[in-house]
Length: 538
Image 1 (cartoon, helix red, strand yellow):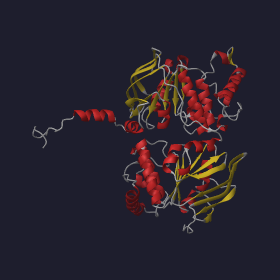
Image 2 (spheres, helix red, strand yellow):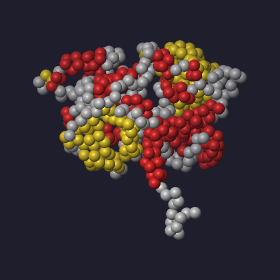
Image 3 (cartoon, one colour):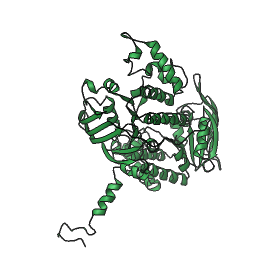
Image 4 (cartoon, helix red, strand yellow):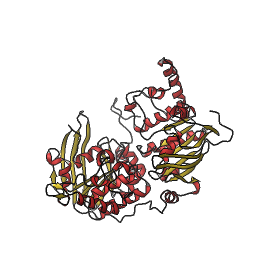
């Protein structure tokens, strides 16, 4: 589509969209200038995803107008959006895992019934795009064999192959290591400098400040502000997002570690497919401290939490030793299930709240008792005391500011942040000796992040041990007293949080220990022996 001279890349006028009684977008006006990186931020439920879904053709607006390159368009579906020069890279990639890169790129964009000419043309075009934008990836590699960072490149290549001039990226760094995120930002800057327009949806204000030219803030379905990034600050953006001042840093006194609460020695796991997921994990956590586990998702953190929480993968073989308060915990059998772990003093906020932490069709008050419904205070003889459970839930809803404050609403009716508060309230208020908490603020808005972080620190300060798993490196650095990094089912290294750097942790997350590498280099001989002659290599 030819753009009108000097026209913005995107102009939205009065966009509104309702889902039943819920008004997701209310008269949104937005201008995105051509050749810029434009950030969009807002709390959960602010309407960001709905707005971008309208732009990409997933939803039709109830009212309003869309202009691309100065010309009005009706975007009926994603194919219409693609023809209008819009591409979207989703947070959860839309790739066929057992197809090659080349096959994924041309899927849905074949030239005709014969595949070979399409593949040949695509191979040449991919070579050009990779060279021009720094998107190098093996076109013949299977997607399932690629790192997450390289899979993301494939998604960007797909959009560029379809001649997208506008790229929408939804939370693009959520599963990347710091070096991969840095490389992505270099790619995005290169695309912008070539005249492409980037729309970046993210909740990470640091990234907004680093990469964007302009930023729009949405709140409660409306556009609250649009400013040049250079003239604002993270604190100002957060205040506009939430409607109040937000503490962006975690305030916590120095840890006062006490006795060992958790000891793990030589923990190994081979899954039902025969793949070794954990390779001799050694860890310990003391009362009154937070141990953060950093790492890219898929490097064994999930398996570690599941074993400690009492629901390892079915058919897995486990070896090693786990002790809680100096008492051994069984690795299998009835004493190793979730109920036994809770009785032993372990609370667990799982990584996926919707599939592991909640039953979405059940009410909030029912969800707040799950796992603890056998407790004496919730029983009336052999029956559950629904009145006691409900009263307990009402107290948690008030203390954790869960909105709306209605215990009868099903869990699916709450926003992601309030769903997370339901799970955190249930586990934290049982006062566990050890809290396992996975991805505590995934998909959670900035106001709820602040609240959840304060609760985690308060538990630590009450003398409890916390094992924190997060792919958010900023969160690990802010909350943890000590940091262990996992890569390929191993502990790559440990650092005190005050000594850790993003660069150092990023290397460990990629499987390289810079401290060990430097130490080894210091012991290498200045002249290496020649293995052929037995003498020195001149």
